[in-house]
Length: 227
Length: 222
Image 1 (cartoon, rainbow over the protein chains, first blue to last red):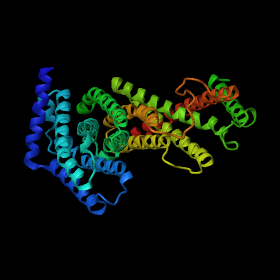
Image 2: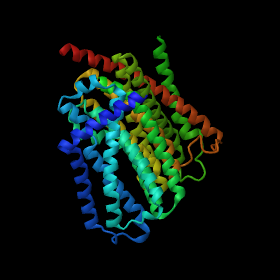
Image 3: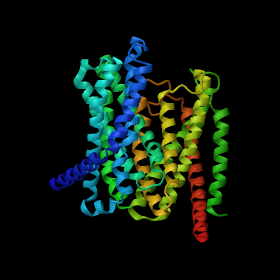
């Protein structure tokens, strides 16, 4: 088990190192998020939406930005291995579960970095009262981000082996992510409006969804990777 | 006469009986506008068959990954296709009912939302199939996606409609576990479920055979 973790960390560290050489995924994710945030903030801002509607509409906007930003960059981990023809070498040097876990850790890191920058900016620019229940906000973001990373990682592994990768990534991910995004928006809106009962419900749903996806992905990844 | 011919004839008579019973044997239910409650005999079975088809597709996909027998891949693809067809029928019959009861074909009720996403998932399944040229790799990747998709189904069918308030009439096995239907409704509905399931099995076997022939011809051309 510890050797699996060590291998996975090595894969994630390798990915991080190559990522910092080109910064393709980081740029795609960050620039997409900042551009949409600028557009949303410029056209809507904090005062265009009535006070009562703010928690729901602004939470939906926040998750739309996170969702599309992750669709822009989270497929890179696997696609770049295929494009640079390094996948066979990686297959030789690490077991499939270590590769999957390493790539998942890398995507989780990327998503966490995105959220750390994006969410405070969003709160400041859009005037969303999320800081009142800061602990719950972190819980919702963590649970939603975790499930998001798990699903995009396994779908990225699938599309890396197919043609027309960019378009296919969004087509395959979106339907699987939709229930998750619904729960996440609900949870964030609950945090913003102070209705902790709703936050509990959506957290439970997100954690169970993420947990099931972890089990299924771990079981199925060797099939995709070996194919 | 062969058994399959008898079965087909029996299915025809059975379905005619179900259609007759749906319109003449039961009375319109209370609390529903006009005759609209009768649609339950067609809407529920199509929804049931679509879920059944997706279950078949998931099981066939798992079997494909274990045995690598192309026959299971054909089964998974055919079942998904039929599941998609029946999901469209369930959506359309649901929308007709919604128009009569709530005066709008579509209002993003949680049930409607979840079936719309279900349609998207299986449309994505076919998008993936068409994007992988190598048949063995296509079969394996599609099988993985079918299993992932099937894991999402319970969340769409059970969790989302429970968390959100819905206008949808109680499902037959509702929260209390009680059966609110009139006994005649139960009889016809069960008969209809059986008939639609038989119909699915029949179409499925025809489609599997057709697909096998198609594949063989493709290989001959190559």
